[in-house]
Structure formats: C-alpha cells, structure tokens
Length: 223
Image (cartoon, rainbow, N blue to C red; front, side, top):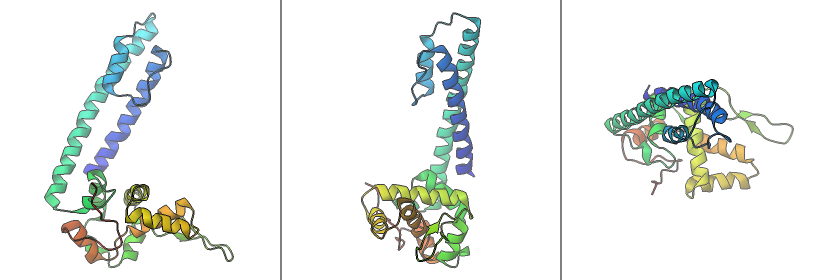
C-alpha cells in the first residue's frame, strides 16, 4: 500500500512539474531546465517582472504550484521514511540483492505476500508475467513479452534486471551470455527478469525472511 501511495504521489508530482513548466515557458524566455525543483522555480520567479495582467496571473498560479510541489515533496519524503520503517520491521534481506532498493523491495514484498503460496518458480513466473510467450516461426525460435500477470511486480523485476545488466556482477555476466547466444537486448533483459523469479518457495522465503542467499539471483551486495 505504501509503495502504491508513493506511485500516486510521484505521478502527481510529475503532473505539477509539467504544469509549472508550461507557465514558466510563458514567463521566461526559454523556460526552465528539465531538472526543475520547487526551489529552482521559486528562484526563477523572483527575477520575473510581469508586464501584463495575463503574465501576473501566470506568476500567481506558478507560486501556487510551487507551494503544492513543496507540500508534495514533504509527503514523498514522509512516505519513504514509512517504507524504510516497515521494511526494517519485516527483517527482510531482499535489499541485499543488487538492484533492489527500499522502494522496489516494498513493492515486491507487498505484491508477493506469503511466498509459500507459490509451489514452484513457474507458478511465480506466471503470476509476475515474467515467463515469455512462444513466438517462433519455422526454425527460428523466438519469444515475446508476456502482457499478463501482475504488472507492478513485473515492472519491479524488470527494473532489477536493468540495474544488474548495467553493472558488473553475475547479473551482467548472465545478460552478456544471453546476447552471445543470439538473443536481442530486449530478449536478454526479459530472460534476466524471468531468472530473477524465485527458484523455489523455500529459496524465496529465505531471501525475504533471513540472510540466506537465493540461488539463481545476483545477490551480491552493493558497495
């Protein structure tokens, strides 16, 4: 629930920033930079001297949006603190897996729940939608993206696969090996996402509830 709430707040923040960009573009030649924050926007407005009633209205609206953005930033910060607190209470070691931060960990634990409900890795892969679908033609064997399953959990596993593929370690070695086998980058990433699924309910339980490493997953700690 906390991770989903964070997603809602993050989407609202993007919406506010987009509206703020539109207003600043009409007030300031060239507009604002892409890495806009509440403080940066406030600094830009301080140097703005509207010459028309319309621009004065735009400036006032921008100030309101900046206040909303600051309030939203505080809520996001509080949400992240809550997530860290709840994760510490679970005693899970899932954040030791390369590519798993507190936000991803909260999403995985929240959507997986009791891992013993998945008898095998195949059951988990089906639930998460990480098992690719056959899309072969003649002698050419190919698989395509599986659009079914829990998309929130699927996205979390895909993010882990991306991080591991970009950084040195077993995850990147796996990714490179799939490329050498003739898979496309997208297929190799999907294979890594599927490989990040649990190999058994026992292994998954150990990784979530104890410091034991789980087979088949890059559990190398981040330095």
